[in-house]
Image (cartoon, rainbow, N blue to C red; front, side, top):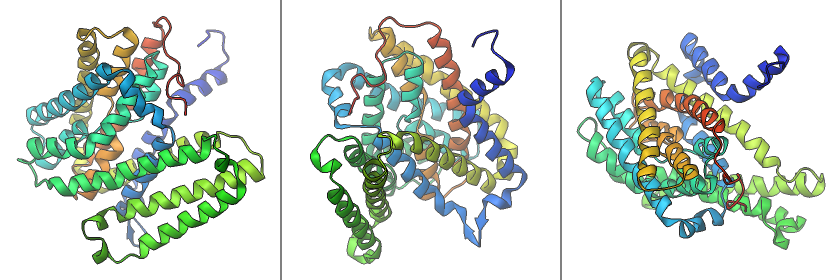
Length: 397
């Protein structure tokens, strides 16, 4: 920031940098002051919005990925595997240690273990870019930890939190497939529709018919009796929403990209705003539902978030240094290990554990991770790495 920059310019730059944190604080303050406004609308419990909101946010993450991001595993298997191992060992064990040391109530403690047991979040990719780290490595670790989370997250929850609260391994695994994996693959398909170079992706008739067919499939899934699906009925909402989002994407490209000749990357500008609004609303709903308990354990949870997150950054970075990775890769691994998918943890807490108390830790840890990630990225950015990879270098669709 230039010392001679006018006051309004500085304020705009600060707001742009910390807009997400600002709006999270606004929603939390509103939920604490008027909890009834975020508990029910027109007699409907707002908790029912949490899973669909997470699915939409995860779909947005999927649209930023491409098949090349997964092929990067073959190009750098060692650093990717190291990032995965550090992510899924350091954070669950540190979360368990903090939860037991601080003596939190069982459900709150389970929430801390949960936030440590989920995959890394997509915000880590942005922070890695800002920090001058290896973005292709960051994106690949995020994608891989997300794909294996249906198996690793329930394992750690059953092992570490099972002694605190009941944990159903299969139910949690299916919930992660429904909330995270299906929307991710829908997002990957949307990426192909939006940015693919095949002729069909630019054909108005194909986009119109494809969009209509996808919406029809969504309707068919929604109307399918639960008894027909058996265990797969758990995936019903994910499949239906995935088809709806793909159908809307196809029709939106037809209108915006072909008929109106609009900008090619309009989705890249739209989804971050939608994701930010969705996360703010999720945090407000959880805050309103657990306001009284938050007043008693909130300060201690903030301290737990700082310790958990900071330990992840430190052990992630030095673990990568011990493995002799270069500086840009060390920064990427540190961000991946330190920053968790708070949305996934919130969804599991509400949808599987049926506990707003367990959702308190994700609601507090999530905003803090964005604040700390921004500060760490800014500090590293002032210490540039020679020839740091660019944002789109190997992850270009």
